[in-house]
Every structure is written in C-alpha cells, then in structure tokens.
Length: 272
Image (cartoon, rainbow, N blue to C red; front, side):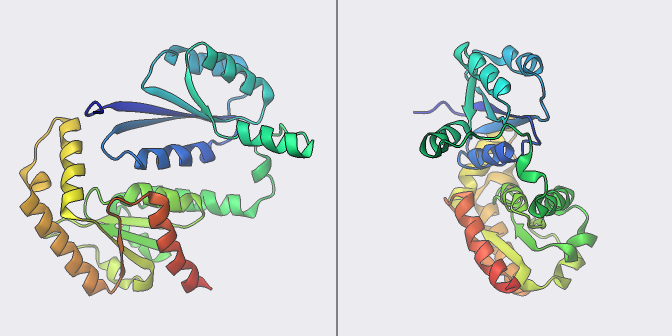
C-alpha cells in the first residue's frame, strides 16, 4: 500500500525557458491527484557551476525529482554526474535525441531556445500562458470575452491543471469555480456558450480527492468533504451548465490529456 499524504517536489531545470519540462511536470502531477506536489523552476541556466549549486543540496532526497531539458552538452554532462551522485533526475530529451542521432548520423544542435527563435507559435503560447495565469480561479472576469476557452466546474474538478495544459498549446483559457449558491460573474453569460466547457465528475471521485486534500492541509470542512454537500454542489453546477447551454465534459478518472483532446475537438471545429 502507498504511504498516504506523500509530498513530492518536482524541480524543472532548463537552459531556456523550461516550458516543455514544466508542462511535463504538471501532467505528471495530474496523474497522481492524491499526492501533494510542489513545483520549482530554474530556467536560463548557463553555467555548470550554477547548475551544481541548484541541484547538489537535493541529492539523496528521495521525494525530490529534477526534470530537465538542456540543449548544452556541458549542462547535460553535469546533470548526469549529479545523478550518479544521488540526485533523482529525468532527462526528457536525451534518450530520444541519442536515438535520432544513431539513426541519422546528424548531430543535434546545442543552440539554446532554437525552437523559439523564429517560431510564431511560441509567441502565441507565451501570450496564452500569461492570459491563463491572470484568469485562473475566477480572476479578472471582465476579460472573459477574450478567452478561446472558458472552463467552469466545482472545486477540485481539474480546472487549473487543464487550463495550464491547454494554454501551453496556445489557447487562452479562463476558469471559474462554481460554489454552491453563488452567482457567477455576469460576463460569463455574455460568452459564446460554444466556448464554455463544464467540467463534471462524480460525487465518489470528488469526495475522495477532497478528503485527501483536506487531510494533507490538516483541515476539516463539513461543506467541502461531506457526500451530501458534494451532491448538492454538483447538482447546482449541472443546473448552471444547462442554463449556460455549454458543453459538459466528464473528468472522472480521466487523464488530463484525454480531457483536453475532447475539448479541442470542439474548439477546432468551431474555429475551422
């Protein structure tokens, strides 16, 4: 049986912006909803000594995982040395790069940020990430009409990790929490309902996730973790989704990538 309420730190390392590794880390986090994660990020690393200063203090920490995407060989070599000394680390690109090199004979470039140098998609992604961060958890509702996608759902239905995943692909995403008895911002009713997606789960899944989260935080809230309150909350959310006329997406026991694909099928058809 796994130890309950384990805490893991995921530390993203990059000689560029680290967005690929951060997205991977957030997807990894979403696959283990009953575990508690912290996410650290060190980007634009340009010296092996700097890397060693960041990573060495965490060698032999079994609940501390480095996730890295270095282009420079000296940084890759340093990280491999640190891994041999006890740092837990995952090289997201190394194995695939070596495989392509063996097949093709073409040496990989060590140019940092080469994928972004003239890529218009990159700037769209940056804009989308900025928008999504600023419109997380119901913030800045006056900007809802600018969103490509609006996610609504009760607490712990997966809105924020899904928003981040979609934003990295270049979609501006706003998400709003639905609390029982509360009235959502008026701007939500002005959004094209085809751009609103209601995230719906089951009371069993939500009870399990919330109970684990409350235990991790050392708190107990009857209205947050009781089955009766959760069922009322879900029923209230379903009623609002019907009034909005939005598409309802089931998130219960589904990977974040799978849910995102469902949403993007609708979005891409709408924008075609």
